[in-house]
View (cartoon, one colour):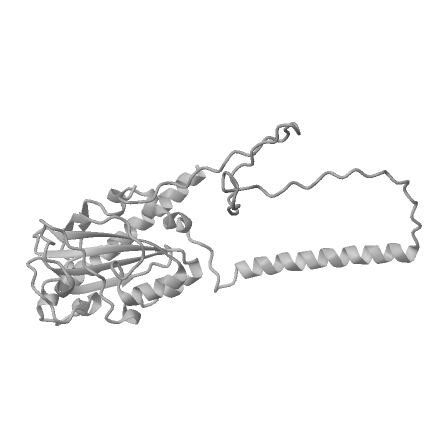
Length: 312
């Protein structure tokens, strides 16, 4: 499990016995519907419907006419027509372009923040073939990992927090990596939400550009090469919301030597051809975007595998 993840939900209480003698009524079992003030257990089941005793009446033979029989038949035909129309409406709504079905593993991905081990979500070593400038290979090593956290300004950039809160922001996981030369550090984040497939697809369209200068917070680590990685050391970043996962993936990179950067750049700008500034030349834009893309792929594989295991 991820460090700091919550314990699994308590099991449902056993159902009460179907019958008990009147002289010894069973103690009501806890109910998930609400607490009852003053009750010794704090919960009470709704009262049972009393059993009523009635006298059987003599049946009265009903006289049917041809007109009434025809009316009943017409009502039946009309009822079947209405039911069929309702079902057809449901099928058509499900097939509308604006209402896509959930991709494989979508539901399972929501629970990965507490179901998957930390080494699965944030591998100790992450390979990035072709992820550097000029398609150079990159290898990142995890040096810091934080416990799961609630969605707050301490772990999310202001604009992203305001964007995902209406969707139901569930939990944030973060870790910091360094490259093979220990010259750069990258904080990565996984933001789990309750967004449905339609909302997620809309969310992911040009997210980094829409958020503007919304740079994710850095995660430093005492006694590591990320010890001096703070807000002023952030150099480049990337934010992505894949359409097939209810997750936002973020990354922010900086120099491991603690140098400050006056104007952080989004990864696509830092990766543009012809750039000669230190951020672009050092490949920090490639670091941020490359590690984001690989964490997305890893998360997708993990979610699909979880969905397949459920069907076995």
